[in-house]
Amino acid sequence: MKQQVNRLQPFFENVSFDRDDNHMVVNFGPQHPSAHGQLRLILELEGEEVIKATPDVGYLHRGMEKMGENMMYNEFLPTTDRMDYIASTSNNHSFALAVEKLINVEAPRRAKIIRVMLLEINRIISHLFWIATHALDVGAMTIFLYAFREREFVMDLMEDYCGARLTHSAIRIGGVPQDLPEGFIESMDKFIKQFPIDIKDYEDLLDKNRIWKMRLEDVGVIDQEMAQSWGVSGPALRATGFQWDLRKESPYEVYDEIDFDVPFTDSCDSFGRYKLYMNEMRQSIKIMAQCIPLYEASEAGVMAHAPEYISASKEEIMTQNYALMQHFVLVTQGMRPPVGEVYSATESPKGELGFYINSQGDPYPYRLKVRAPSFWHTGLLQDLLPGHQLADVVTIIGNLNIVFGEIDR
Amino acid sequence: MAQHKVNYAAEGGLPVVLTTVDKLVQWGRSNSVWALTYGLACCAIEMMAAGASRYDFDRFGTIFRASPRQADIMVVAGTLTKKHAEFIRRLYDQMAEPKWVISMGSCANTGGMFNTYATVQGVDRIIPVDIYLPGCAPRPETLQFALMMLQKQIRRESAFRALKPKRLV
Image (cartoon, one colour):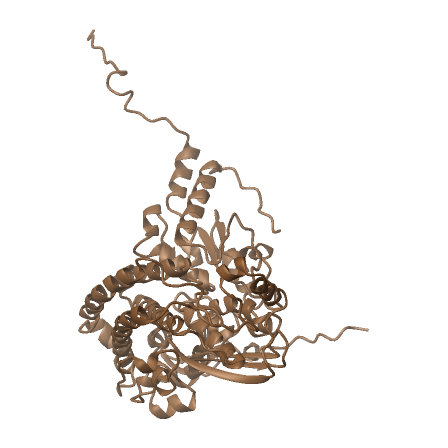
């Protein structure tokens, strides 16, 4: 008897490329230099105008949520690095915060301040990468080289702290792995003084650039209704005139003590979002500067004390028998959080990044779900692209700042 | 008969360089390896960093091209999933000979940390690989070193004799 082929047919296999209605179907991706990863778009064109767009995701699906269900909580943390790989620490932090909420542990004050510093450093890394690649797609090569130059300096800061350039794992459940290294504050201070001048460089090159303005202004207009119905968050939402930032709305870490603005605009278009990103980098600098006195006033200690869930410091493990035993159990068997479910959302550079964890009391989560902002922004493309020219597709994809690591997971 | 004596030893030797055509061609090839922009995941960011300001790939003669027809090497930077696998083969087949492949990062080498239902456990199951580059993600310096290793390998190869068909693992 012939075996039944039980293969799922992807929906786009029904797309017919030979048509007689004068429409052309263009297959954009999955390996397109400006698709920012493995985005596949099936575009139906009339002349050069897009009349229908179907995003197809899943080309980078690595099964991370399933992996999360088979890994201990601490084991899964480095995997979160590979989600939004442009700003790894924000993923680590969002996951750590969700687990901390689950086990009801709070990080010590100094750890919170270091986290805020690292998060803002990551925001700058991410935004710089965004402006670099977006400008490159639109045709401004100089910005790419300029932005990467500064990005390397920020990466140096991150490297000073955790030793990695891209996949940081710089945050642990219950705190951060170590105190700031010697000279970190000085180099950060230097960067804080230098960076506003660099931002001005980019703006000088772009703000009045005719090509840049023609390609961005009134392109990719997301109005408030569309943004809300598609679950848009982050800068794309704030560009619709909606001042929503989770750092202000539900403050975590020490954001409630820090004075910063949430830049927003009601221009709704790509150019407005570009200005928004620039202003957000300035706000990040402001937050980092305010963290320095807070850090100096805080007392030492970067990991929470909760022997049931979190290992003691290395020093204690090496000197005290009980701490060593605890550490051994936590490493081999993993922590066992209480039964329950949590959802915690943070403002990652791209929008609302949330982790939902359902725990049944085992060392492994029963279900781990990631609410990644880019996923929703990709869905939006099917509403946003129709009516635009084919050349604008590249602008819009670049402008939405989507990263495929977190879309497909 | 004019009698003049040129002391070549004193003047730094003959103003002639002797080489084989093979070496000349391969020297040229090795110093203009154009790479295909094949960014799949995290490693793509480091690949871009290698091409950008601080690390500057252009000085090795490596320019990123968006078309497989213009590319000599394919830097597979990132996780290859089963859904994507047919496309990497198609793009590899579209590249003109001679062509080389650098597998960048643990995911491309062996599947790395993603031993799941969705990922291909090593890009060498789909296309033949010349250089394996470990790391997760490898630093741009590492990619530069891999490229220099590849350049050495290219210089050793013969320009005219057909290369042995490369094998999949």
